[in-house]
Length: 308
Image (cartoon, rainbow, N blue to C red):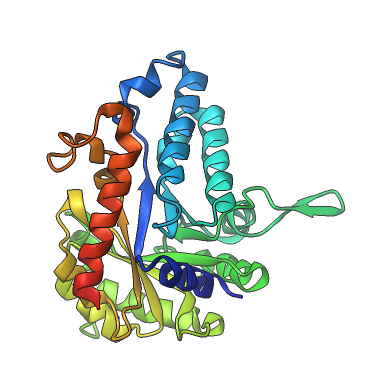
């Protein structure tokens, strides 16, 4: 079964088009967890792993996927990357889909090296091994053209993996490049959306969507609506909900008439639910994971209400 069908099946099973972003800045982690560990690279990484596992334990039955952002693990060096790998492994053991948010993008042997690491396999003597073998999807940057995408697509076909290609991102300055008009009248993001449709034609699954998918931000609802028309076979990873200001009714524009077509990321609003005005008076700090579960249910219900 290809990657996008696995993701859609999990969304349908949980009745929830949500992915929990695991972007663990150290100051997000409750003091009750931090005080258990020494304040060095190893101790911080262990605290993050405990935090991640507790959030996964409290959401795996209602949230279909996690999306760890590699920057928040790489910044703690080798120990942080160990935590990244253990987080992915733990989520997979709980039945969740894992989207590694790395935004990799390079050409030739470098692109192949990235793909080997996160989607494919690495040659060790006469054996090929899977290094980060619990990852289902990887985010990639298409700015270098098809040369930077082909190695990932090849591994998607070979190993039943998927990629999310940056098309229209949720950050405020995305328009500096992505909204520029080309000679034919298309914007850059429209052109990239067309390319993603083309790149993914060999990986379309039973629901009519491809494992070559797209990142399209919730903070630009009109563009989200346009891209859904341009790329009918492209599944969307939709960041920008919650803390960045994306609203559920705007996000619905990226979905099809069957309630499919996207998975909505929430990071801070889920990870730090225990600090939010909505939940801080209902849960104690040591109940941070219960607050995350409560917010995940609230988010699920809000999204389903407008999508379906």
